[in-house]
Length: 212
Image (cartoon, rainbow, N blue to C red):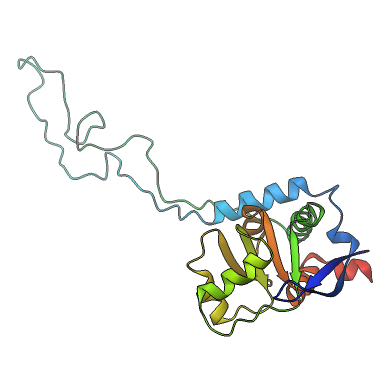
């Protein structure tokens, strides 16, 4: 078990927080991270693209012209795929792209991605993150003290002030610890966590169970 320094919103050290061994293990979980990201992105696809076949486009069975004597190639119907306005051959139809990942793999993937950020010294822990009002400059000032630009802010409780203050900051996203996913963490090179959020993430990865 190791520890991470904890700071207040002014950037001053206020102690440390213990980190379970599971969130420090970077030797396993690469495939789990890949599976989690692929599944997340696949599950975001609507799968609503649809084209009409020759049997679905408007038209009737009348021949455009007689079979012989016109000099044109033979044509049997206007819905032919080789004609403009005709049906589409092998076109997309509504389908589900959903992929399932079991709970054990998801826990491993989340633990692995957090462990990578900790090993790369890309995790900053604050005791709390409470803004007086929903002004962007207040959150920007906090991030500036920690020299953070592209960062995922993870808290145990996302306040309305924090959510509104982050909307106009490019490269900044706020997420709730109970809902943050592997894809979100992978998108950002830095993590800003509250102590409460770190505890929730430990619970979600099963680190507390493994420690006990």
